[in-house]
Length: 264
Image (tube, rainbow, N blue to C red):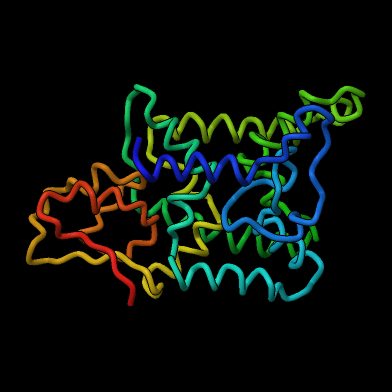
């Protein structure tokens, strides 16, 4: 098992380690929930120990307040490592990596779809959240459906939650099913097209202190890096690509050692 895979497993467990929820139910709302995890991980998950930064961002926007804490949080991580947290720490990204391993017909996602996540960030998590004072991305988020919505309804002993299940719940489940199906046939479909957190971090890929470097004199453009990349990035064409999650798979696979990483 690779080092990256071990880190992904440990990160998924540590961020969702509120074991008492398995026995007594409920959602952890203790001290740790005051802080945010650096990636997408629903606040409503019974096992979640930390808050989701996208939910926190929409909360402040909905209140008409400037989210200084969240902006600083995203900015600090982005300036240090760019989108690297998506590649190593995100449970939902890890879930998509596993889905793509399922044997099926595989397709390539056209590059222009990668820019749709900025619409989700600005339009859904920004403008719509502000005008409605509701965290609308959270209301549609497939990660929330997977680790919060479904478990909470299934574990409902009183029937109160089941009584509230309606069109909105089924719409979220439909979105989740769609993301799962597309993720089986395309690499990290959600990360590349819809994730607003990925959209934020991608802005910093060109400016982060830690970054990848491609030596054009060594590169033979064999495309090995693109084939192994979980985001299908041709890093030899653009070492600051917005979809690069700095997973380092390309560094390991490069036959001429043309791809390295550095701190600048």
